Amino acid sequence: MDVTSERAWSAIEAVRAKAMEVGAWSNIAVVDAGANLIAFLRMDNAMLGSGDVAIKKARTAALFQMTTEALGGLSQPGQPLHGIEATNGGLVLSGGGAPIRDGNGDVIGGVGVSGSAVEVDTVLAAAGAAAVSAMAPARAA
Amino acid sequence: MDVTSERAWSAIEAVRAKAMEVGAWSNIAVVDAGANLIAFLRMDNAMLGSGDVAIKKARTAALFQMTTEALGGLSQPGQPLHGIEATNGGLVLSGGGAPIRDGNGDVIGGVGVSGSAVEVDTVLAAAGAAAVSAMAPARAA
Amino acid sequence: MDVTSERAWSAIEAVRAKAMEVGAWSNIAVVDAGANLIAFLRMDNAMLGSGDVAIKKARTAALFQMTTEALGGLSQPGQPLHGIEATNGGLVLSGGGAPIRDGNGDVIGGVGVSGSAVEVDTVLAAAGAAAVSAMAPARAA
Amino acid sequence: MDVTSERAWSAIEAVRAKAMEVGAWSNIAVVDAGANLIAFLRMDNAMLGSGDVAIKKARTAALFQMTTEALGGLSQPGQPLHGIEATNGGLVLSGGGAPIRDGNGDVIGGVGVSGSAVEVDTVLAAAGAAAVSAMAPARAA
Image (cartoon, rainbow over all chains, first blue to last red):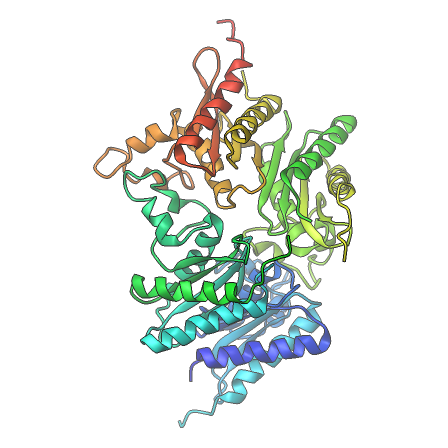
């Protein structure tokens, strides 16, 4: 299945609702399997610079089919992917990017959240990705 | 007043509703007075390459405080602004970008729509900008 | 309140005066709340490559609402924002960028200074930001 | 002689004074012989998108040692330099960029002005360039 515009917007709504619950001001981005932007929202008071970060987190998660913090772990000095952030027009390696998976576990997109502590961004991105996955029935094989 | 996230999203909803009415598949972007992205939506089936075009149309309208087709008219060969598209990280000069004005006539952002015939994009962008303006009371002077 | 051109120029004058006092040759940049350039000056003998650094420091401080050294601390290897410099068209994470705040504490822009030792750049940027804040009365709530 | 920071700022002051006289809101940029930015000012109410245009006009005039309108004439469809605006990171070919010449006629920099009608920008840029030239004694040969 694809991340439709309706599903993408549901992810943004899910993240926004949870952000308001915890008092976060977030930038929220959703990309498709091709790592191309489908939907974006900058909440009021969210940090301006975090907009591009959110988009790049979503792209990073979709491009590498893992969370941004997982890729970040592989990219520390001395680690195998050190320096990878300079590829693909700029990646982000801190928490807050989560791949979106369909019912078969295939990556169909990514959610990126930025603007709060990384731990909060991470939880919010996971919530956004889960919101889409919950809408997605497994394909008949 | 500012283009809040709520107002930005209203603009996207207004464009999307009108696009569905006329059978268009659009990319829709809203930026603030500083030409920074607030909200974006790519409708299902909208052309992928039109996403960046929509964002640049919204930016162009906010940066130059006029519609993209007005700026385009000033940028034809032999016209005073010929070549201006190479500035500001890339401008778009075809219809589909409209400045958002508050009740005092001040430009507070821009809407960009791309994916259909330019005439359709133009009508849709104007509808999006009008949706925000309609929400904006004039400031007490 | 906004960083007017008069306030921006006052910031540049304040930095320049202090730079001459300590024998520094600086590039000095001031941006608004949208991280767009308002004023810039390269002092005589200032390093050419530091011009872009000064502009990016000012942008970084405005985009993330903190000093560049504070953001730099969060971006060391193993820290949550490691790699963030690849976003927003390039950030600078060393000292010398300071957010400008109005009387209510809201960030209304940024000052960036580059060309000397980072410790000097840091002091000079703070002086520039303070010069603008001193001009800014708190808004009536 | 070089365009010192003092001379660059004098050019900006000269353009600003003349702009206020004629009711223009301008972005004003001055570059050195290497086409690198020395000074910049965005006047209050000046169009945001014209900032980059002013810088590129100043660069264009310094890089090609002629006014931007002269280069523009050579770049129309069918003319020898058609398409040149895509070089050098983006040039601007409409009036408002003027080379700064010393007393020997050598190009030592450029002034760029943007934000008003091209005719106004052109007059203002010429005034800025003349302000610097007036400060510059011919070098002893």
